[in-house]
Length: 412
Image (cartoon, rainbow, N blue to C red; front, top):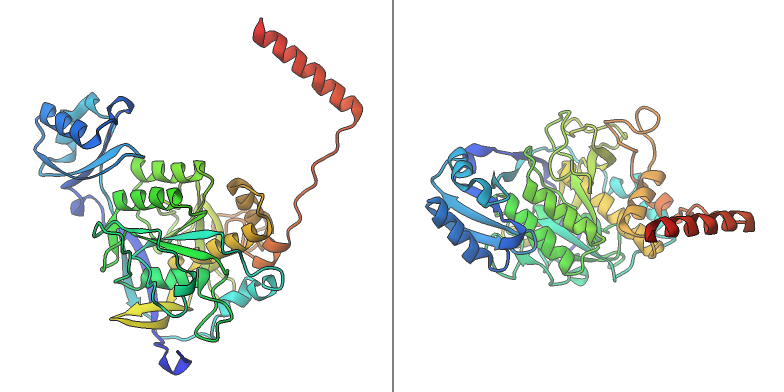
């Protein structure tokens, strides 16, 4: 598909939580450790015992929670359930919406801005690495994506195994990470890696935290090494945080959008310790006017007028879009390149590498606007790990004595 077929539309992706008013009849109930042998049956018994009239919507065995729909208020539900459960919280909604923006910037300035073309001289990536797009799904039939797509994901919105994109947002994010490189059509993604889709947002661009959590867990259990989440909300959630912690403990690297409110507040899940929060910059390396910032800001990447793959009304096409949603997959893609050239590193080491190789912007060192700086692909793939210091014989003897002493105390 040549450029004469491109749809040059500019979008501003704004992610926000719309709060309790829209989630007041849907709740997440965390079950206690001893109650997980039969999740649905156990939940039924608890609800019956507490006198709660509610319908069980879904369960998650790995994170030990159930989602219910009821006319009860949150306070009434907490009072009735009390110590019978671990926690009760609203199933918050994360929503993505679009604001048209006409200005057009040069084709894929974003890749040159973060040194991707130089990085390709070292590595194009590794097909053994899987990046999970936790979003509205992915147009896996797109000519620029289909050869890098693996059918491992799930559609949590419609409860089936076909995570086809019916919105376009997820397809745009997927293309930034892994549109096929050097195939003579369309654009180039950052890394020649595999992508999978967990559809957790519906055709209107919003979804429940419980679905996001289940998508994260399923992606990691399906082999994803990197979790890219161009979504978020203003409310924290035990369930969502547990899902991120689960993925991190399994060795995955998690990346999420800081948010598009232009405020001193990092959205969730980006604000969690286990997740890299990504802000957006423009072509002049200035923080985008819409980008959130704050104490959890870790990295920034291009997020304005980024051209990528798109799916609209049955058409496989391309558009320009803006938002921290666009910045996030840049970091996911560079992480994939870095892991391809440093395959023995774990998720914490890759995270440290991305911080160490970032181009410092704003005030010297870390700051709440730019974090550690702008992600840099070339520096990430050429980074030399600090050598492990050699231990001389005297040091080894001291360590040996220390171990003997510790063991003596341990067994006495």
